[in-house]
Amino acid sequence: MDTYSKKYNIERNDINNAGTVASLTKRALKKRGLSREFVKQVTIGVYEAEINVVIHSYGGTVIVNISDDQVDITFTDVGPGIPCIEKALTKGYSTASSYAIENGFGAGMGLPNIKAVSDEMNLESSEKGTILYMKFDITEKCYAS
Amino acid sequence: MQVKDILQSKHLTLLNQQGNLNNTVKGIFACDLLSHVMGFAYEDNIFITVLNNINVLGVASLIDLGCVVFSHNIEVNKEIITKANELKMPLLSTKLTTAEITIELSKMGV
Image 1 (cartoon, rainbow over the protein chains, first blue to last red):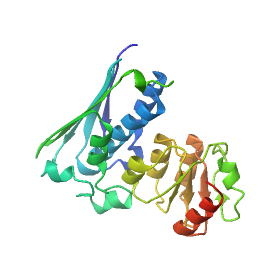
Image 2: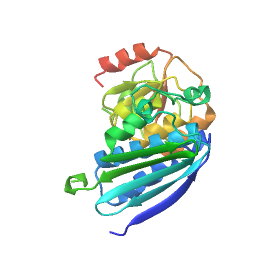
Image 3: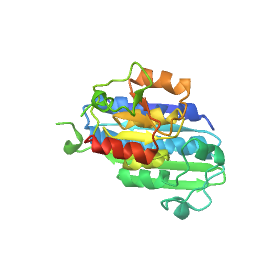
Image 4: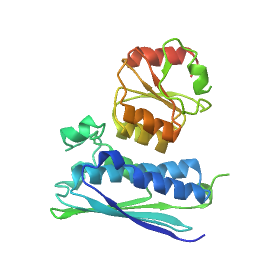
């Protein structure tokens, strides 16, 4: 099947459109005949990362690549970065604003959720911004039966 | 069990007209933190919340939840109802507390 490759912009504090990339990615994966469970795992990863860019950064982009054997997704945002990655990966640790919390986010589960659902995750951050990479392997069992 | 079956409860009111009442409902997830819903809810769950926010619909749709129930008689924004119709997601309301409606649905065999 053809490789799917898309790039999207994500705006700061655009809570109402958060989830758009997750929704489009979900649709693309379903079209390829992948199972509900696999699609859910990827959707969770994309959604959580999308929310993180919206509520924590000054905006950014995401590139979604889907091939026959993997889904790889890279989120790149502009500052302020994550001061302590180790803490950010701890379940329940949150630095979310009251704005994010009022909108149902900021439970401190975003990055732990992404780590749990993906096959590989890499996080690099500085005061200039954050790059989050996640990969999902596509094997035979990932297809709907 | 389907959404139309749980609507037999006198405690539940349907808020939107274009939700799919044939959606299967199996199990309950009651929570107001969306990352917990994303991480721990299962597809076809009934999602009970007081979070009066459009992102409730995004999450419910993304992980294929069966329906959303707003507890504590909260007044749901029109924007949410419109979005739910677009997504065909059934929206229900109850005057009961989250705990009370969870018990009620459990008694119904969800």
